[in-house]
Image 1 (cartoon, rainbow, N blue to C red):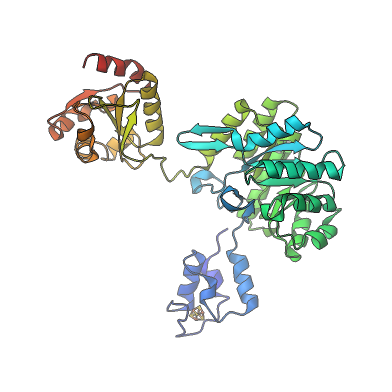
Image 2 (cartoon, protein in one colour):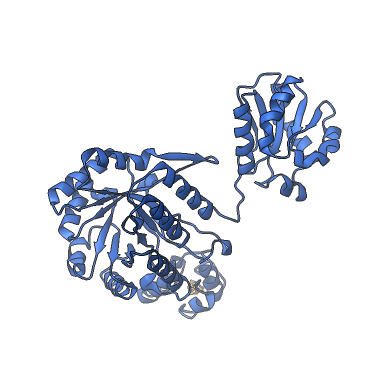
Length: 453
Ligand code: SF4
């Protein structure tokens, strides 16, 4: 629930002719403040109490939480909408793998390594898991500490989650991996909350809060907040698909629609404890991913299951307001020479990767001219007037392709056969050839084209 300027202005001193904030009136300042256009510190006339009140009102409905540090840190929370089409989702959920101190050494090494090494390149993005989740399952503190130490040494800054039943083991784990790794400590519960406040109060690391049910979670997060601990991730304890999805939706609604701060925190979920086979686990993870989970912990990372999950995540967490685009330029595929042909298309990412992959598979040396259409696909960009004979001609003339190849044959997408005449007018030196309507047709079209050159 976004705060309104009219709510903020009620708290301001309303001094006339003051203007020290740079705005003509308190009202103008409040309006700007509500939209993030200025800082609360710009008004020097606020008491500490009012400042805190305003900061509370301006705080994001779901508090952002960072696990880890630097480039590798995982930030979750800080979302503004229930549905992606309303604006966008900002912080994709972290995917973690559960590693326990009862796993054998080889298994531990394989799982920990897979978080950083198992990557999939998909339309120009490297998709992978994010977190190593280390659980004390043996009850032996020494074993847990050596697991934490090993994982911390093996990883190059990957965010960690430490899971143990008692606060002392968590504290020792924190020591073992180094406080500067800023791991998430799991979990503060009804039983240990007082000990957690006294022993973890100064630790400056995020804490997970676990309880059976959201009412109990609320009581815990309020108590932690009173103690100054606010970087929290919540686990309502649900371990069936239906209950877990219901709780995710409830938490998101309470935070965004009711502005209910005790539930204004990202969540952690455990498909690894909810299924006894990988397929079920993937199905549960997918459902939680589409329903607001902040962290999804899997029992293992297997390529066949991780790949669809990270692609789904990418599709949901890309900004629907911004088309996915690649750089507009001449791409050289299969080492083209000064007689290689030129194929022309738009800079919509999916178009580029489909066409480029098909060309690569033919092994025909080719120049792929990618025109800037602001990320729109072939037909959409034509309808918007961004991809036609005139714009394509202008792009080709400025692209420098005429210096790279003596071949004056340019292939346009089959869907835009209608721009052939216009393009011939713009590029009188060139023969404009109509290519296939679909990228899949390139595999037969291109070898035939060069065969008849
Ligand atoms: S500095 Fe503060 S009191 Fe003065 S006009 Fe701005 S908001 Fe009002």
